[in-house]
Image (cartoon, rainbow, N blue to C red):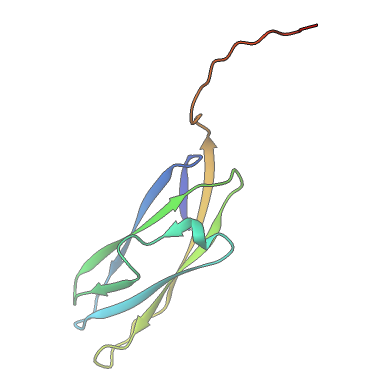
Length: 115
């Protein structure tokens, strides 16, 4: 589970590190699914290439729009490259709004009562 915690309307970025222990390149297609998948995004695109014996990180962004917790699933589905396929990976994405910051403060004066 990857948890996104922050203020309402804030954008939170988390990294997912992927390692390739094989001697062949792995290619994954990343997909966000679930009730609140639209609130999550993959800013660097949805294709992830991991060179042999290396690791890479993908960024997952979340922008909170509501006070209720958001939930989605990040699926990484392997593409066959040279006969090599990786396992399908699934990560649960959850959010929590910890505080609310005002967008603006307005001061106004008006009479409390008029005849």
